[in-house]
Length: 490
Image (cartoon, rainbow, N blue to C red; front, side, top):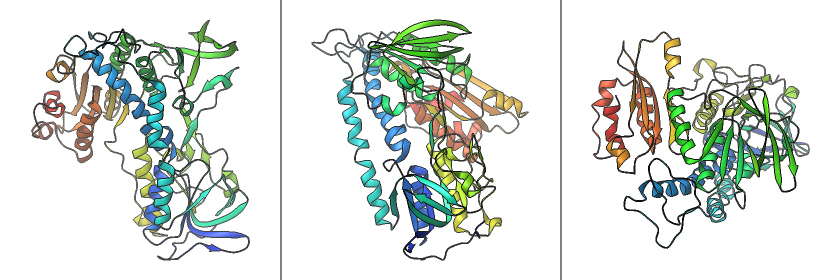
């Protein structure tokens, strides 16, 4: 194995000979995590290179979080107008809208509808310029940008499309890819990237899997006029979230036209003419369903298959590169990993990946002084499903608190009748707050409602710094705002 050394600050440009190029750090993956680590090390004078075979920016900026919320914005507008229809809002000159059925007591907002082609074009106005902008920034910082598939050919060496590169440190920040499917006809399934690039949205869409992707896209698609079904192999979808709030979301979605088929799997897909014939098994009983599109939302796995980690002696499993608590490979000290590519305890979220990448970079900069290495702290990190309404969790779930032996005070409040809900036309909303009786500290917050993700950020800070319920309730808030509801939720 290579000596795990710390390059001197200002090592200068990459050292190159006829056969290979040497760096202080090579980052594999040009997503938010990889770029954060690259910029941190470059600011300390290291010679850094980043390599990716996809446009720079990664999943979140180009194919995930950011473009998804642009698409969701159109659905929010349609939903908001429908909630206020007959309550002072309408679109003159329009007939019945194409955006789904009446919801939550609201009416139909005239002819207001989503133009999918225009919406996708608007989304591209954000995503298309992003890679060039990111690369230009890296170049300005002295970071070399490489394009191609990276493959380990030694403990500290990579082959990148035929060129050999070596580095004292290599950070694996490749993210995740859709989990492979193996049933007959799986080639007809479209992934989330393809969904966001559709020129038109078909009438009948099945979403495979009961997680983030399926719920978020189904709630957008139904408000764009599609009939949507989520097929989940588990009896309860969104199992990472509070079950009481999940059931409220499922009920709300059903009223909007989003069906959820539980304990169900797809066993076969056939293309018959212009439609898909999908065999769905529910509790082992098959039935055939006609659909125009099936979208993959059945989970993701670390994107490691092409790296040939074995050539570098890097241990890994289905959860990612096996790392220490400091994010260093357990079997090759030259290799580090962060985010979805690392088998770390953090949730598969962009903010988690960025924190881990920065910690890994900080530890690499400390060289062999392992006693100074930091560990990532994910306390209070929120996770959310941007359905309509959105569902968020911060801190412990109720069963996790009980399993930890905490004497927990559980406060479940239906907020759908509150002023903040009435003001926007009335909708499904509820909050569950967990408080440790022994310390009065807030240890968990679970929220379902319009814009409640912003409210979750306040709970995240409270959990991060260890605020008590009384301290949080005493915080002043501008009234009337959603934040002014917080004290009543406690």
